[in-house]
Structures are given as C-alpha cells and as structure tokens.
Length: 512
Ligand code: QV4
Ligand code: CA
Image (cartoon, rainbow, N blue to C red; front, side):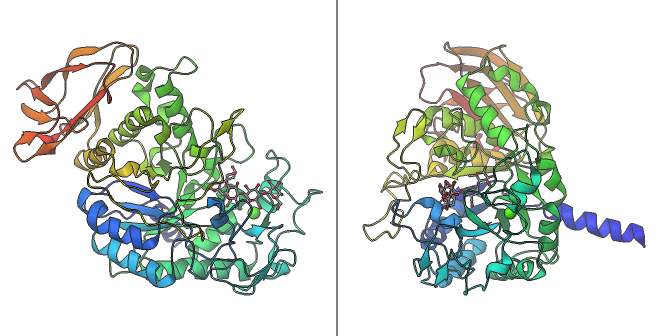
C-alpha cells in the first residue's frame, strides 16, 4: 500500500515535467506582451504550420495600470485580481485564442503570478486592467477577494518588510520582493483562490504554467497548490494529463535557495544555460565553443529532465532578473541566431524561444534607462496589433525572432531530430564545432575569425541536402547553400567567418 502511494506521488510529480506537446513538436515560444487576438492568428497562420509546440503568454489576469512610468511592461507582474482581462485582451478573446491554438496543435502556457499582488505603493482606486477597485495601502483586493489577513507581513521579520538578504531563505519567501504585497500561501483560503484561478485556465484548455517568482514561495506551499490542479481538458489532451509546470527560479549558484528544492514539483528555468551560452558565443572569460563538447549536465546544469532552457528571457534581455551583459538578445542578431541555433540543435532541456518587442534602449553606465518600456502601443496605452510584412517579418516594433528564417528552420530541425542521440562531435580546439543528432541532422558553427574548411562525418545518408540557415528546401531545389553527403556519410563544409550567418544545418527533411 505504502509503495502504491509512493508510486502515485512520484508519477504525479514527474507528469508535471511533461509539456504535453503534440505530434512531434518540441519547442515553446514566448510571445511577450502579444494580444490574444494576434496569438490566435499567429497559431493558425504560422506556429501550427511551422511545427511550434506551444506559446508562453503574458499574465492573463487583471493587473495594475501605471502612469509613471507610462504603462511599463512590468505592470502585468502586479496582480489586482484573477479576473481574465488584461492588456492583451478580454476573457472572451483569451478563450478564443486557447481554442484556436489548441485546434492547430499549439499549446498555451500561462505565466502565473501567484506570489504577490501589486506593489505596496500601488495606491487606491480603479487603475486596474478590468477597472476593479483595490487599495494597496489597506491590502484590500475585493475582486478576489483578499484582505490584509491574506498577506505575509506578520511572518516577515525584516525591519523594512522587504527582502533584505537573499542569504536568508525565510526573508526570500516571507518578505516583499521589490515592495510587492506578499501572499500568505500557507493559508488554505489563499491556496484555494490561487488553485481556482489556475483551474479555470485548465478548463479553458491551457497545457500548463510558467510560475513566476518561485524562489519566493515555499516548495511545500506550491506542492499543496499544484496537487489541487485538475487534469488537462480532454477535448485536446489525453485523459489523466497533468498540467506542465515551469518554475522560475534564478539559481546561478551561491544563494541560500537552490533550484533543486523544486525539482519534484515540475521543471525549473536553467538560468546558467542562458548566462553561459552568452559568454561562450561572446568568447568572454577565455571561453571557447569547443569547450561545449559536454554541454548540459557536464557544465553543472541541472538534470536534463528538469531543465527549461532559453538564450534570453523577458527579464534578462533588458537587464532585469540576473540579466548580465553576456546575455545574447535580438540586439546582437548575428550571435543570437547562432546561439538559438545551437540551443535548438542540442538535445539538452526543454527549449523556449524568445519573441520580443523593440524599445528605445538607452544604456548609461551599464544600465538601460528605458528597461521599463512596454510593448508597441497607441497613445491611449493600448497595445498595437502585430502586422505581418510581405516578407513574413513583423512590423510596428515587433521583433518576431521566431519568424527569422534561421530560427524557424531550427525549430523544425529540432522536431526532425527529436529523440536522436548527440553524435559525431568535431571541433578545431577553438570556436569551430560541429555535431549531429543520430542519422537525422547535422550542424556546423564557425565562430572563429578565420574560415572553416573541413570534411566531416555527418552520420547522414548519402545525398544532396539544403542548408536550412542560408535558405531551405523548396520543391526540388535549395534556396540557399547545398551540402553533398557521400555514401560514407562524409561532407565538405566551407564557412567564411565574414558570412552573415556563419553556420550550416542540414537534416533528413531538407534532403533533395
Ligand atoms: C519599487 C522599489 C522597491 C520598493 C517599492 C515600493 O524598487 O525597493 O520597495 O517600489 O513599492 C517594479 C519596479 C520596482 C518597484 C516594484 C513595485 O521595477 O522598482 O519597486 O515594481 O512597485 C517585474 C520587473 C520588476 C517589477 C515587477 C513588478 O522585473 O522590476 O518591479 O515586475 O512590476 C528576482 C526574482 C525573480 C524576478 C526577478 C526580476 O527572484 O523572481 O527578480 N523575476 C520575475 C519576473 C519579473 C517580475 C517578477 C518576478 C515579479 O520574471 O518580470 O518582475 O513578479 O531575481
Ligand atoms: Ca513570498
């Protein structure tokens, strides 16, 4: 009996590591600050057909609306209630998006902000995305409802009520993160309200959650909440499917709280991956691409089955949350394409691609003065739609990295090589490396300051392949480079270091 219970509990926790991706799809894209109507259209016209597995959306719940600074992106990380009207749209639009994305095989993952409500200095009134009245000073949020009893202030022991020392796990969990009113998640009532919110989304058809600020919540409280979650909606998912859980824990080492405290509850964001990949591609601190032969657990990253990996995220791309100068974003387009290509070719982790908006970046003494700027919007503060140009890129300040040919084609590459082992590694003891995935795909990088000119064993069957970086296969021809693989699996590669994209990728489905 005891054994049975153990097996059941273990099974439950492992299930929450599964992103529930459908039909050979492997990657998630974060459509940061997109409107629900645009995501629905993007699922149908692009993400579904191109093999994307899912979308991480911005927080869908009611949030504070701020004037100073003007409508910052981070106002959505200050909940006012669990009503589903936000800067991205109404509840009806959210429901329509979830349905339409599910119908084309694309999952929706919700960014769940459950550690706190708005900042203590958030004022009083109806400056909220659904117009609900609230009072930050009285800790009164009648639309949930939460009252002052539902917050942690008595539990927090610091003089300021703020987290003052990240070396003290009690402060980190029980005090306010940058002034944000900290919820008492030990209370059955609060747990119930949070679970009710998440279960409503599960019933609407979402596949899981990116849970915000997990370091600031006790694993035991989260365990209790996650156990209250329903199985996924059987209209789209196999019966008994558990919601996927990605926990945001920034653990670069050296803090009191480590990522592994949360491993049994779901996956965890691996921030070391983002920081290290940046240093490697930038060749900082003596790093070289050849040192990534044992990339993954060999670099001290968490176990493969626990990791959610990314090149950059919405915080570190603008210097928030463990954002260092090494992080590679769309602002460094050439390096970004290579780093994302590397991530998508490599078997380690569940991959997430960032899709950003442009802002007026203005770095003074290492700090971006405009790191607060929200998405492209009209003068009334409402978010602009995402227009699609004739060449399939996006307009109006939407970067759409996921639509860059090199990145889209690597999302497809990852689907094609899914389940294949890491194979046929080669390096020049510097920044030229190559590796394959079984007999299904092969990729070659030149991040040195000289040309790459070498014949390599690709592991692929003989034939002519289209490089999916410089172009792709269209009908019976390649729009970019061609690679001839001999019957012995060997192929010659030449990549000039001055090329716009100094890497080549070929796979089973890009064969002529
Ligand atoms: C200010 C002062 C405080 C003061 C407070 C008083 O700085 O010292 O106590 O006023 O009210 C914004 C402002 C911040 C302000 C706060 C409260 O930037 O200056 O405090 O609001 O009004 C995002 C942004 C934050 C933003 C927050 C809420 O990054 O700048 O704060 O949203 O709007 C740690 C965590 C990690 C976190 C990361 C950024 O361990 O969990 O920092 N990452 C997640 C999200 C992130 C989000 C939050 C957590 C909070 O990914 O986007 O923060 O939900 O590493
Ligand atoms: Ca907390």
